[in-house]
Amino acid sequence: MHRMLVRSGLILCLIASAAGLRSRGSSEVDVGQPTPYRQKLGNQQDMQYFGQLSLGKQSMKGIFDTGSFELLVFTRECKGCGTARAYEVGKYPTFKPGSSHQVHAYGSGQCEANDGFEEVQIGGMTAKQQPFWFADDCTMPLLEEASFNAIIGIGPPGQPAFTAREALDELKETEKSYRRRHQAVPPSLKQQIAEEKKTLKVARGKKALLESFGTTTFSVCLGRQPDSPGFLIWNDKTRKGQPHVMQIPVAGKITWGVTLKDWSFGGSTAACADGCGAVVDSGTSLFAVPTPIYNAIWTHFSSGRYQLDCSDLRGFPDLVMTVGGKTLRFPPYTYVGELYGQMNKEAEGFLSMNRLGHRSKACHLLLIDLGPTRDTGLGPMLILGMPFFREYYTTFDLGSGRDDRSIFVSTANEDCDPEAVGDVSTVVDRLASSLRFKPRSVNVSQVRVPEWLKPGNGVRF
Image (cartoon, rainbow, N blue to C red; front, top):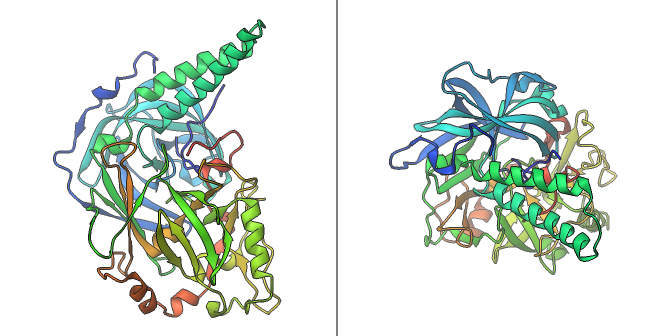
């Protein structure tokens, strides 16, 4: 049974005993004392952001994805990989082959990949013999004109093993139920259990890149101006306790998941009155909500209470939500604007081309429809994608372990630095410029959707 070790998440996604696989503690790392490194991220139509990395002395571009967990690269011989093809397997002696094969599933498609070990360099950081996956066959239309050659999962370390352990426990419970009824265990179930055991052993033998680099904190900020760059700050300070910094506890056990309440517009709650669970995901292009919430938002804006003219978004209210007990505010351009381009088949059904309003320039909701509600234990699952990082300088902190993780947010200034102002509401007022009310144009062919949209990727929050 081929399966993806889920994140990302969302999606997102990003995910031995096999002879030749090294133990978890044997990966050679040369990082010294972690020092901050501000990495500039290129921008592909505001839907994909990518940074430089070196894999086995081969330079390439990668998407840094807080919603997935493993390093996946696309080989030069990869079928269906379009412009993402880059990595030459075994070109340098730094490469060591593994012995495992998996299908990695994302919201935008899936890839068949083999495992290996390679030297990875980003800035001044080096991880020798870093576990990774190299894809040689993909069904992912997004790759036809991709701006990247790799997906670098920077979700909390340990997710692949955690997910495999849960899946194995579920299969064993099914096996026990057969035995309790004195029924024969189906051969297919026995095979699934055997394969899941192997998957778990493989996952336990692989360090995440964050672990190899010795990175316990990092920040993400995306430029607010269209086509402006983003930044990933490795080994950043949390700025905990400073008056302009809001600390949000991480509620997810294996994701950067947080609690969310009162998704509201103009003082009217449209969703999450009783609470939701949300994944803060740098790899998803837009905010994403389940169908019932999407429909509620559509109904809210179709009620006639707003001037629905997309030439000027001043008629739309800010989106306000309570995340981890902190009130966060997002201007209209983060959820409404213009959709254009040819939608690929993987995105069909997740984006609606229906327009709000009847004026000459009506709007689209810039929201991904996740489909049926998926429960996180805290309520329906939502994804806080790239618009989150355009408004807030966001620092991820692994803390001392799974129950001690936090996300720190500060209002971002125009240079993608944290705003050093105590009163966040004052900052929001000062930033009420024409940019906040200018609709953003979204090329639907470039949209990255969450990993959890792929059938079979269950919710493990």
